[in-house]
Each structure stands twice: as C-alpha cells, then as structure tokens.
Length: 275
Image 1 (cartoon, rainbow, N blue to C red):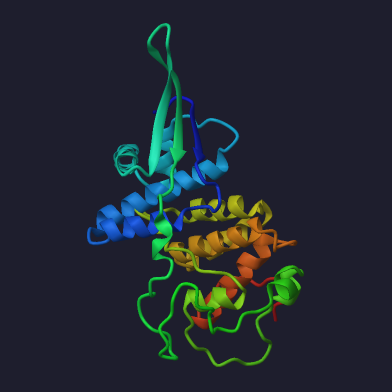
Image 2 (image 1 turned 120 degrees about the vertical axis):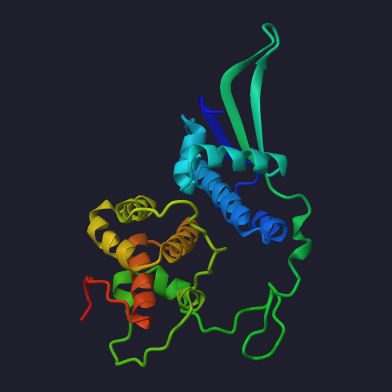
C-alpha cells in the first residue's frame, strides 16, 4: 500500500466522524489497548487526508505510523482492521488488457450508515442541576460571544482577568466552553512518548506559526500532550468555520494560559499584554 496512495473521505464534513468514534468506543472500549491504537490510526488517517488532499502519499503505512506515533507494522495491522470494519476502503485500478494492477492505490475514509439514531440518547451522568441532559440540550455554562470575542484580536480581547482570582480547578471542557469551543473526543497519544520538539513543531505546523516555536516548546514541556492536541483540534474546528479572523496561534496560547493558570502551572513565558 506504500506506492502513490491517494486518500480522501466520502463525507468531508468535519475533521473526523463522531459516529465512527462512538462505534469504535462501543465495540472496542473494553479492550483498552486495541481501542487506543485503532482510534489513533483512524485519527491519523483523517489528519493525513486533510494534509494530503491534493497530492499522493508516499510510504503510506510508514506515514500513518508517524502520525499515530506507532511503528509501520502496528499501523498496517490497524489499517487492515479498519478495512475489515468497513470504515475505510482500499482500491487499486486494474488494467483490463494486461489484467494487472497499477502501482497507485486509493484509500477512502467511509462513514457509518444510519448512525444518527443515537443523537437523542442521554449523555452519561447528570449536570449539577440534576436535569437529565441530551445531546441537543443547550449547555448551561456561560459562554463568551464568539462574534464579539473571537472575531476580534484574541491577544487584546481574550485576556485573563487582571483581578486577583481565587484559583479553582476547572476541567478542559469548562475552559473551552468559556471561549465558545467544544471539547472533541479524547485524542489518545498511543505508542512511544512523543518528544517535546516534535510536539512543538506539530503545534507550529497546525497553527501556521513557526515564529512562536520557542513558546510552543515551553508549552509542550509543561502541558500534557492529550490536552495540547484536544485544544488544537477545537481551535482548528472554529478556524475552519471562519469564526477566527486574526491569529489561531493567539487563541491557542490564550486557552493554554487559562488551563495552566487554574492549575498553578508556570509556563515560563509571558505574552504581549501580560502583567
């Protein structure tokens, strides 16, 4: 599968398909290792499709392994499992005259048919109000107006209050909700531990901001990788919707600062406008 692979998705609506995520969780959730690895490979395929949508991928299986943090062999194993589940499809063109296959391969990321029937099922747990929540129930958390805050320069408008605040530990979901963002499904970083510089470069590449690489190295050194990639995914989703007109990097750093602030994490740098 490693020569000139072209990858695309059947329904290019979002970066990944939440129904597929739910399917993988329901089927493999009891086997933690398999669940983490197959999700990691699925997310890697979605990211590769986004990065290579206009050109073929060379050394495809190795590239998937690099994105997923796995070896080439492990990536190949879970690619085949996704094919078996019908979540991706691999095809090769066959020459009808010579009856031989070409060297090019097409990989298609598929969705789940009739997967909307779970949309109204209750979420696990109850909110503090004691009212049963469904997926279509509006959140009761106070959100900053996206039109008022995110469209403006985030360095100027999305500031942590200058007042002395009482430190309370907020969840990442709570922090993202204050900026009008949604927490995506947990992005598990499987396999060997990713090096700090690699994570920093990933942040810079995703945000298109190589000038702040030093800042991102410090973030990668202090903030858990799963938190970093969850925030990156949320910022990317909002950016794709066109609601961020200034700097994606500034919004990312502002959310990281808020996360670090409520947990007493010293990042070791200050941005413009910080006291």
